[in-house]
Image (spheres, rainbow, N blue to C red):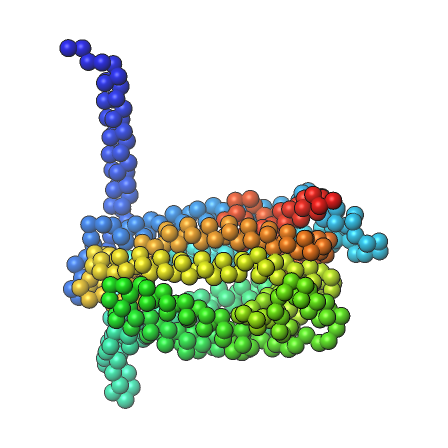
Length: 495
């Protein structure tokens, strides 16, 4: 019989799809075949690479992310080479100057005067960042290919069993884990130190921001390292113990523990840890202090204490933030902020920060972080006993340490999810910033907030012509020109 024409069409279509699929898989397999599938160093008892190319996939994902982010960096680098002041920003700031009080300082000429310096600062930072990113990628790939993790674990086990002084031995998994993390932390400290020194004492100093001495830098580094050991040690020990004792539903108990630990850290961070690095003093009695408390009362914000922090002893960058639980809220102003903007502009900036609280952004972000933690550990529980995953990276899958299981899960299977969620949180953060700006504008502070943001941009040499894709991917705060446009549009609607 004759075969209907549509049959031939469907058959040829299915054949084409099958050909495309097989060709795609061959291409992917050819790429995977060129990438290392197992590390050089492997623990005794490790079976080697698995049927699933975990290591090759991890390497390719890391390279892919690096290439994508490098592309964005190159786009932004070209924007930092622009010589002409951006017209959209000039138009917006020109409107601010037009509506400013007579005799006031004009912002546009000052921004134009600082434009070349801001471009130079941004160019130095992004070029340095590109070098740092390249090194970080090479270091990560080197650790994977050489088998640094299984080697460091075996080294920690040998140190704990044979090389500690006074015949002291550490052989439990938690004890060896702590030794392993100390080794990794110290190595990271050494490899990152040159980059931190160059960033602080070359780039930041060159552009007039760094104020700290080398002695203060070393003191901060020692203090932060000791705090990491003092807090991180007990935290890791409890986390591993809960996973070991929690049974198949350990993720639920881990989530409760992480929630309590988050609350604990939010409690002690501003009152115990941060005062170790900076001096916090009550804001002196002044009209500004009175107006801040009046603003807090107006919004039913339970402000109990108002501090000034000596941020100027390290940097001339400025900031302001809030913290506290329940009816015990506090506000902190950087001393640099008080010298850079006027009193009304400080209030408008605080109106923005209070907008985050009033609109529930702070609570939303905390809830999202807790959900993220719970979901991530639930997914980890599904992969916890995956011997093939651990053996692909050089470990004996029959006795993999819990900390290694955690590290490999978040470094491999969870890494794409984390990258996607991180981008979505960046998008959400920008949405919240627009909302907080609108809240401050709704309080009648539009002109002061616009002027204050321009001055902060001016004093901090912020990017004045960011690349669209770069800012969309990296910026948690919208570019200045977008924020000004949104506020002006809102003010125009209210007329």
